[in-house]
Length: 104
Picture 1 (cartoon, rainbow, N blue to C red):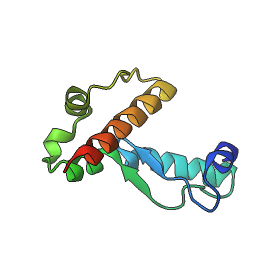
Picture 2 (tube, rainbow, N blue to C red; picture 1 turned 135 degrees about the vertical axis):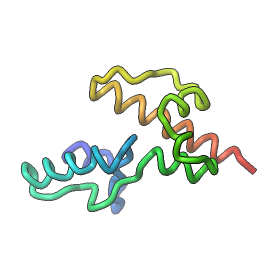
Picture 3 (cartoon, rainbow, N blue to C red; picture 1 turned 120 degrees about the horizontal axis):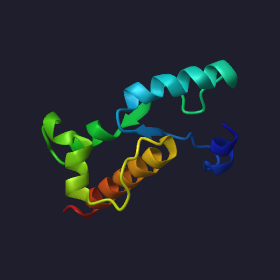
């Protein structure tokens, strides 16, 4: 919570972004409420798979992380270590945003 407060732009709320955000967000939300008293992300999350599907007009079956990796070519890869996986997901999302911005 302190990191989010110190790293967020003044007057703006941090946005929870994740690969399968509905699953991860439920745990993050629970523990923020249990130990901090509130969730600094609010009550919503942005799912990378859903964004990828909508941004690039894909079918749901085309949104597996392996498909994303093959298409977006991130430098990192998931290791099932929480920090490594968070960095991998952030890289995937950044690559999506860059690719989407480059579209006509």
